[in-house]
Length: 136
Figure (cartoon, rainbow, N blue to C red):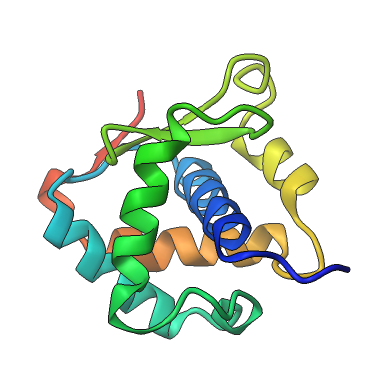
């Protein structure tokens, strides 16, 4: 596998995080920049696969992901994105499949489908539960 650029790594983590969160039925998270960055940083430090993405590190990791979430609304060629930095969604065409099936297709040697769900769990757990909404 060829080495990914920083932007490619951010794109993959942003998409994997969205899929991991969606797999647990979460459709809305608190959208504050600081809260999301801190929650991501906490989750990232605990996630066993973070070393597979060496350009995402340090105190700027959360900011890199925040910026990537903002770009995800305009991306093509992905399965999932983020609206308003706080609402994970499946792109048209993939919304018929469901997050779990998309995760199975998304998984690779850097992180399995379960790895992405674990990152999503760690991220959601680091946020205020009263501001997290699970889908209907």
